[in-house]
Image (cartoon, rainbow, N blue to C red; front, side, top):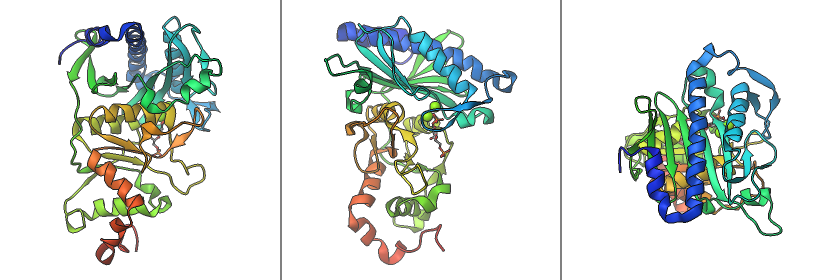
Length: 349
Ligand SMILES: O=P(O)(O)OC[C@H]1O[C@](O)(COP(=O)(O)O)[C@@H](O)[C@@H]1O
Ligand SMILES: [Mg+2]
Ligand SMILES: [Mg+2]
């Protein structure tokens, strides 16, 4: 169905899903409207003198908020007023907000991902997750967002880059829509994305090398050793410090992303948030034949304990993600390579 508009795609997919399907379609269209507003703001860059400033406030994770973080949060919240959404949870808000108590769905959102890049003209984005709203007696908004990621009904992200795109999964495949300024709407550009199984690019912030555990160091050492090392082929490295940008690249041409736990204070669970970053990205990646783990365990099987909890995140080409898990659990992975490479990490003297 390449070339279909987002609206036509949603109508065709949601017909068989009844009222819930129609509600999901409405939510995605509302999110798309807000994303197009953000696209305009981002496109102004420094010409827009309010958006790139720092605020005095920080979010629940202690990150200093940028003006644009808060503007985006306000925009998404207001575009979902009157939509079939029971609860709204955001990186920028400590607690979820009750919108329509009668609605069946809930939205968790990172309104602006990669916001440290606002001034540097690198792509940034919005990540969202759509879950069923729990309605039994004990359940409340918080319990709704603590459902494991495999319960997501849809997930996606908008990316504000050279192209404004929407990466979307409704649970069967992952599709990419690009905004056509000629047509004034999102148009399907890639159908049923399939991440190549064999990767030759890895993305990790290597400035944290000395803080990683041994398994992650060994995995990266082996990539860096290239054709002369145990992998017997060369790898490229990428790091944009923008999760949506790395995820988009991996969906389009493969590779692996790692933001592991490390020994810095506050990083024992990595940096990324489970409910509104790792879960939606994992849903998109799995629906594109890739894999996503916390280094060992499948992300979508984790039971969140709190709305803003962090999680180590490894995702991308299935074979590489599986290999990273083996470095953690299979002593033979270290043993088999010890005589030649075990003590000779390229970052070690
Ligand atoms: O600066 P670091 O430690 O490399 O972290 C970069 C990561 O932080 C993030 O910017 C976190 O997201 P937010 O900008 O929404 O806080 C990710 O996009 C990115 O992967
Ligand atoms: Mg983020
Ligand atoms: Mg953010």
